[in-house]
Amino acid sequence: MAHVKTLVITGYGTNCEVESAHAANVSGSDATDVVYFSDLTAGRVKLVEYNFLIFPGGFLDGDDLGAAQAAALRWRYAKNRDGEPLVDRLKLFFEQGGIILGICNGFQLLVKLGLLPAVGEAYFERQVSLANNASARFEDRWVHLTVNPKSPCVFTRGLDRLYLPVRHGEGRIVARDQATFDAMVAADLVALQYADAETGEPTMEYPANPNGSPLAIAGLTDPSGRILGLMPHPEAYNHPTNHPGWTRGETSRLGVELVRNGIDWLKAQ
Image (tube, rainbow, N blue to C red; front, side, top):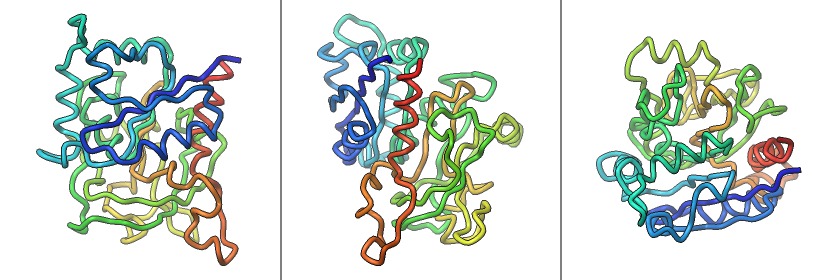
């Protein structure tokens, strides 16, 4: 079986790197490193030496100019010490079969880089963004999710429903136009949706849908299924005692099963 080497990017306001690395470790990653963006530009770390890349949650650059906007520009235009654009290294990582997980702020980065949803396989072309929550407030709560069984996403295979925490102020999907949105939905690139606690059906009702995202979109994948971005935090539910009702005997499927699915997929290749 293939070895899985996970790279977690931190710095510039990221604050969930430790939990994300732990999620990878408990899910079967053979090696996991947490590094700064500057480690990539200095050449101390090379993306091609890894096959699982995680962009964790946090507040990149204090959400200046919009969540992850500055970070997306940094990735697009920064170069390593050999003068190679980092975005080209990221492209090579993906072309060689790597998988990418973007959580909350990491999801915001992926859409602004144009890695998601990549409708028509137009990678690195910004097609959607994540706007301010419809509630006009920061949302910090646990939400129910339903999984799209038709999605090509390798992270969600075999899953149906999840219960995970959200904590964000900009999580509402906005497409550049209706045609892009419709094509994204038709291609089953909507991987996760906010759901009603009782029925499990996608919902637009607040607070079950915490940000007012159309079609209750909570997470997107790309046409290959090897990239997943989601607003909820799977790394924050890595043990039964993380569940808000665990002292009352309440439990549900662990969020790290998303991470484990990605790692298992890599090992099966």
